[in-house]
Image (tube, rainbow, N blue to C red; front, side):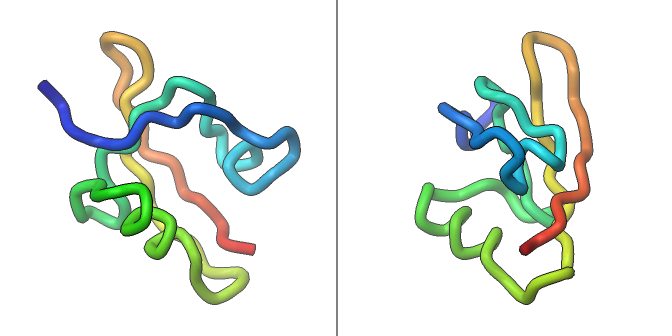
Length: 72
């Protein structure tokens, strides 16, 4: 079983939407570190504007993707 955080909603035109994250995606890691609790992940995704984090996600049963998420 893969551990991570499931995305339950994505704001249209928000940073996650722009990064290509979709409802139902499973965040597996953030900048190479395993996904943690919702609070830990939120903290990792808040940072200096115009910097980015690398998200590894699992979508569906087979697809693994790496997405670069620009912080705003």
